[in-house]
Image (cartoon, rainbow, N blue to C red):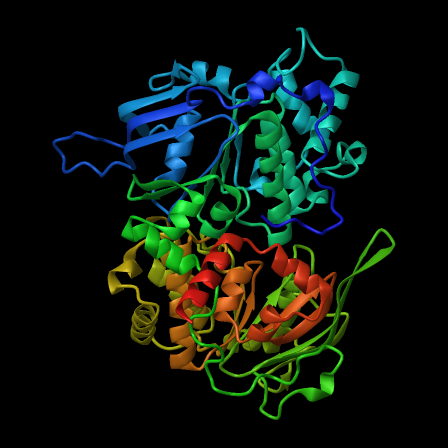
Length: 596
């Protein structure tokens, strides 16, 4: 596994008062969790009104021992989250176990009441949810939210019994925050969620889940929205808890690279069934199921297009210190010395500080960096959603820096944004056809018949059947919703797209399909992309050139293959070292040597 070189605090050694007895830390003779033939259905399972829906989980067998980290991977709809929610008794009202058994530390949970699960949740089984932004209360301090678990379970997780005093609560909360590697815990207890980074908020959720030292932690996609360095630090917390306390961890993820780096075993799910349950190295070297082999092939690092698609030489604008070296061809997008200063309570912060780069026509320029590096702010400046403090933005040779009103609105016909999360970007009240056609109506483009023809054309271009136009977003998969978002961005004829973390919420197979679509559209329509991402594996596949941002500055730019092979900046080297998928890369390298 990779070790972060960031100055952010790592996991502190556990205080003596919270270390479990050695007899508990060691692996037990039998499994902590045992699942046999588990089948879960949603809605009606038997009815005379039509065929029943297939089970969400079907005939699953799984065992997890103390101190073991088990990754459950699969694409969206594979059943992995349904399985995790069943273990902790959080299935929705429409979901129920229809066959099989679920046993935790000898106790049958199959038909356990909600009251029975409330006794286990927090004390014996903890849950780390996916989205800390939605899971933490914005109007309560961090200290208040972490200490709530102790108020709900008085006497739990400590020697003796009785209520804790306020001073004891504060000490326990600070100890927990130290345990999960949060720096300055005495200050953090007084802060609110909006004052913390995404990685720190995720650690707070881990602290809450581990507060009563449960035997099992279930982590449901806990790192999908985090950049690679923060992701690495958060995953190190789980490793430390498993190693020190004997905590079992079920890590639900769509990211096979993360799973193979941090788990001892990988469970591959597809269609509600377990396809493989193997130790990591066995799975990597000898996948037995074709679906697993397909996942590994899509997750393996490296470019599949052989480098630059256009055959043009790499941009000579490979250094932010050399703005005069822009190539002769007019860039699709060009920024020069871009600056954005935010002022708050008399203090100024340079979120973007002298950034310069160019996107060559028909190519993809990726902007990467940690959370808070300034890459999304740069995108908002380019789209004129924020006013720059200094510098210029040019689109197809035209200066758009000072545009306002109608002129700015016209800019968006040729320069469009594809958001990270199509769930929030698409209006759930509208049909797909109405969503795609809305810009045409807003700009009063064409007749009703012409608009309908344009919508049908776009659906075909993004490889969606025409009938999807009558559907609502909730009826589509994540990949289909992202295709709708791309179609909407192209409906006015935009030639440059800004894709802001547009693939981070998608599983590896869906990512591969959308990437293939983006490449096809680029080749067919001559599109140019500014691709903003924290996923370096995806960036390596999709981009021609890359810029690395750190603390508002562009520290390195150039051809993607060259920077990934031999980065000049120490920060870039640290970023690449934290990129998950080390075991996948080692395997790919050994195979390459074997065939050379």
